[in-house]
Image 1: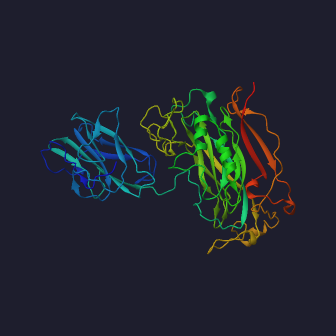
Image 2 (image 1 turned 120 degrees about the vertical axis):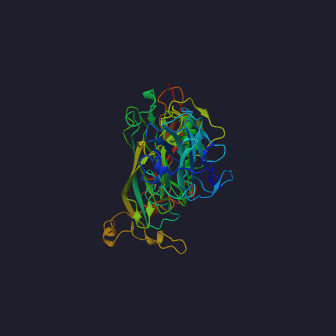
Image 3 (image 1 turned 90 degrees about the horizontal axis):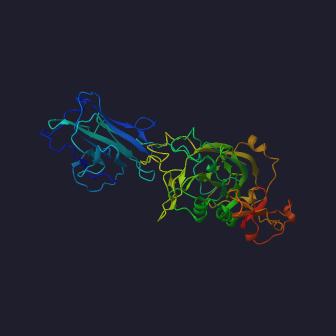
Amino acid sequence: MIASSERCNQTPPGAKVPTPTDPKEGPFKLIVDNKGSDAGKYLPDQTYVVSIRALDEKRPFMKFMITAEGAGDDRQSDDLRPHKAEVGSLKPLQEDHIATYSATCLNTVMNVDNSLKKSVTVHWISPKTSERNQRVRFRAMVAENDEKWYAGSTDREDKLSVVLEKDKASPPDQPPLPQLNVCRLCSEARYEVIFKGQWSRGNHPLNFPEKLDEIAFETMIGTSHDRNFTLWEQGYKAGNGLRVMVVDYDDLPMHNYIIEHMNLEGGTRTLIRGKRRQYPYTSEPQHALFRVSRIHHMFSVIIQMRPSPDWFLGTSKYELCSNEGWLSNHTIPLYPWDAGVMNGVSYDSERSITQPSDNINRVGVGSFDKASPFFQMNLNDLKPFAYLTVNRLDVYPLNPEECPSAEGDEVNVKPWGGNEEEEQEFDDEPQLAESRTRCFSDWGAWSPCRGTSGACGGVGTQIRTRHEVSDDYNDWEVKPLAKCYDNLENTLFESRECFVEC
């Protein structure tokens, strides 16, 4: 909802007194539970509990109003003209039947009847991350009867007025480095990525899947890539590769999509693949190695959760380059994402295609559906479903001639932007020329056909490889760039569908 252009008039209907009593004289308090956030802060796009409580049980109340408004909106009116301030939305609890939406003010809930109450609770959905920074004031009116009522202040906090401002701290799963348009390091690096699952009945007890043998983290799949390549991204539609992964549990289209975009001048560089982990081994790590360069300085991965409607874990456009050097190591927690292509509120929901499809976004944390494993939760309540760790293994300096700079850019010719002593440590590293054109041997034989489910009689996948022709650059045959891709192990992979014999 959008806040009204002027402050809501909270005078209760039928009031015989036109002005409220000072709230400090009343036994009522407005409380916003910010779920472990710092005092006075809220996280974007999260659910919070807002309540009014009678501090004296002998003094219940008949009527109430709760309004969310931009802090500083001190003009008084009942009209509904839109205001540019985004303050989120208040939602009554359907099962309580105590509160309903106000007919005269936006972002306001009020009493359904005049029965005596000792407390009332509603939910507030905070503004999304994409909205502008905003301070939000919650203001309550509480009426003991038609002659005595209290209202929160519009310009200060008191017992019936609370102000929260957006927490500007990064989300817990945010990669540590800002994304760069250009990486200026004159070096390449080799990394290990480790995915370690934490999804369990102990960590996530609410509506945990009933059929334990169906629980799995599917194969981690991803790539190192340049700034313009997108494997997936919050707020955008899922591509065909991700769509097929979450609908059909088939990562072959995504695998091929990554391979097809391998290019020395951009696109992707290394195919990242882990190993599927099924219950009770979902906590065992998936490992993969990959290579990055001043062109391919980011990586993205996807790990599908099964069972689920279309939920997955992962990271998108994780930056590894900085002006100071290649990131040495870092660990981030992972929380579920919704691909937006299948309907369902729980792990075991009956699945149906979303028409039209939604954008990729966080799974509905703070859901109002009791079947959801995230019912009335907040990110601060939710334990990570996995941890993703990247460790830098090697840094390979390049010759300055191999690092042409964009106009006006300075190239950092040190391996990782360190001092001279740090640079000396890597003087004996091989001077790799992997940014040049490379060529490979003929394709090897296809591997045995393996099904994704482990059962026979269905569609499976075969993989074949080919390797770099020579370790000596002078012996490499120069061929068209489109036929000369490389990855970390100087090996190319190709996949195709097959039938799994019984």
